[in-house]
Image 1 (cartoon, one colour):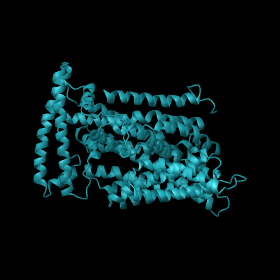
Image 2 (cartoon, rainbow over the protein chains, first blue to last red; image 1 turned 120 degrees about the horizontal axis):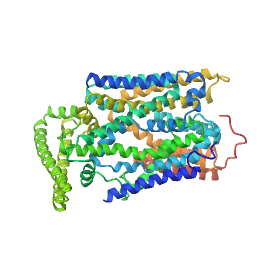
Image 3 (cartoon, rainbow over the protein chains, first blue to last red; image 1 turned 30 degrees about the vertical axis):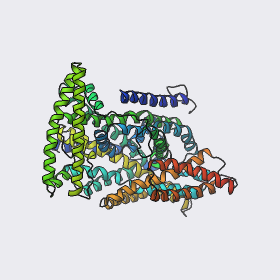
Length: 35
Length: 571
């Protein structure tokens, strides 16, 4: 039941999504701060 | 508060709690049902429960005030959290689920021995047991000061309601009520944010507000300058913040119980990842409300102190003449500030770069003058009321709500604060009852095969006991500001050791119970000594404590080897 998560092809894809979202948020915040 | 506000406040709270209690009236029929909601919670229920347990009333009272005074740099504290969610989802969730444990500490007996489990559970109970009541007391104190309520009576009422529904329906009642509480919290905060923008002068739009805040240094979101003493920078967030999140979400039963109630590994993992995706934007939203408040008060007269009772105390003290002079000066600077801010926005709309630069410099000068006057005010407070905290950031948001929001919405926003207080404290209380039963009562009881009904009854009484102790301690501690601080510090002193025990369990498979127990005991003692003898920031104790337990356990295992257990001990 846990081999394949819903929506994304693998758990690694889910973990990557969470970390990419964090990276995108931080990048946006850096741009705002520098501006 | 108007009668309509009271109706909205009481109606909202009673509906959420009444519905949660009614929905879960049969939860106490089995131990699984009572402690883990029958392990039937879906991912969104797990995620909302995790969010509601972490977000206490202080989140909604203090965070906007913090952004108002200090900008948005507090957000960096949460940068390690999504990474912690991923690590816990990968490492801890499958182990906890496959062993079908009720508490995180139960796993430690399977992996090590009973005394290591009891040590970790004991540290958790001491820390959470004393601090849980304070999460009700903090908002009661602020609301009492602003609304004239009796703080002790407020805590007693909130505490009684919380104990009632937590004891009645166990984890399921906590989870179901938290879903309603989170809905009210999001609706209330979104409404407050919308109205804040709506209340700005007609010529000031949302982007203008951000521009003003940015030019006055409030959008200081990320700093890459590392400092051991300043916890708000990128590196501290990604290390100290990461280890704090690992400790809190990975080893604190008040959070572990949220995702242990998930239907499967998948549902628990998705709940944690939902928190990882939502937490940073959610905190940004709350901080943004604080920044919008700051812009709002550029165009409206802001009080010299948002803590009204303290203001009145100073105004009736021997320092009153000085305070009045300060207030007159403050009013003049505020007028200049309002005119300059309007000039800046007009220049911005006209794309007049030169006028914009001049206005920005003037506005920054008025800001510096305002900050100087507020510092002078705090010095006066120290003279007039030496025992009182002059900081008024906790009062900024709630003062705005009471003064500017229409009838009905004031009640909704007070319901937001009280919902957050109840949701967070109920999560903690529920986990205290579970840990007492599973890690202290069941392993040591002399009863032969106690029935499920008996165990549920013990858990209920343990929950009542911790609830009464927490509220009693909060009322006692209220007389001593230092004691409240001591309890908050206590938590950070224990977290590193507990995380170290779990890190050894997960990653150093060759280390056994004896080595980790003595390593943890020694590191805990050293941590307390460090606290007395050094001025290391609390945030670093998690990382240092965890690393020290791992290193010392590894060393002890080599110097003082213990054979592996022949069979798993019964849990």
